[in-house]
Image 1 (tube, rainbow, N blue to C red):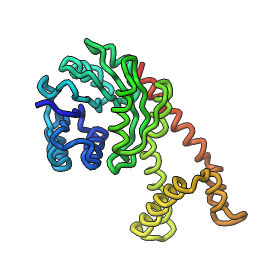
Image 2 (image 1 turned 60 degrees about the vertical axis):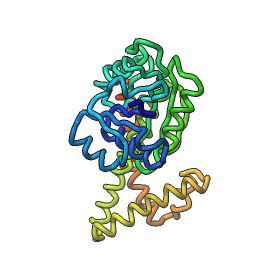
Image 3 (image 1 turned 180 degrees about the vertical axis):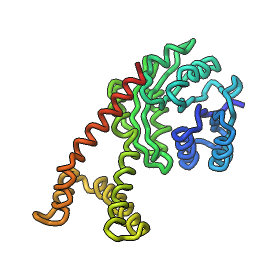
Length: 268
């Protein structure tokens, strides 16, 4: 049976993307196939994906002329997996593998394949991901629109040049982890000040979500919104003085730079 879309790899990103696409009704569940070698992981995904199909390996009969393929494996396995997809007849491939260039994926294919490289993040699971895409040598505007349709079903999409994708990988790719670390720390700070963990968590998570919504809706810059909260000599000013003194801003700059450099290393 040929499928409309095949996701190669059912790990965290592949699973999140599959769940997001099913939830967004991007295609009928039975038109989606996830290839995942680990039996235990397939069992987990089967419960979450409704009528979508799962298989331990890719086969020739899975692909038809219009089948699209999404590459969601670890970098060490990406080229061999892409080679197999090409051998099975893939003509259009969306790669979410960090650091791996379109030219490297094109080089392992026996025939020209339209390769679109992307970097989404895990909020695709709730339809609020942020993704960037760039096309390879054989990509047409229709291929970019196809990739954009997949990722826009689970969040926002921007188009960039491929040389900027390492920066995207350093910034928005790991950003959920960066922000979860901040949330963890703030919950712990509330507990240290005498709040119960449940109360502290609710205050932090709701403030976090509300602040993001305010930033998205207001059209104001983060600096303008921060100034509105910060009264001269007040409590917010006292807290911000500590954060700036401890180099929090510089730490984020260095974190993004380190992640972007790691992406470049993976691509070499």
